[in-house]
Image (tube, rainbow, N blue to C red; front, side, top):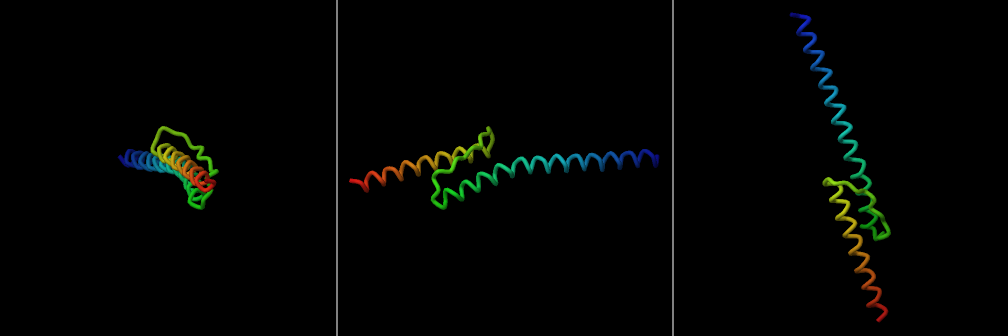
Length: 88
């Protein structure tokens, strides 16, 4: 009975460690692209429209990257229109 309880406790600890490790990997795989996209967004905010948002995925992070690409493209078009208006 004590052996059985010890086995259950050991199994629980091993399971908990496995879940924690999986959670850490998932968090890391999510944070890396978000940090990169945030850095690119800061560049855009500082006026750098030459940034390239290279993240492509079929999840929410990919949606954010695509939206940022569309925003940068729009800002480039607006900038070009302003330059043309300035030339007369």
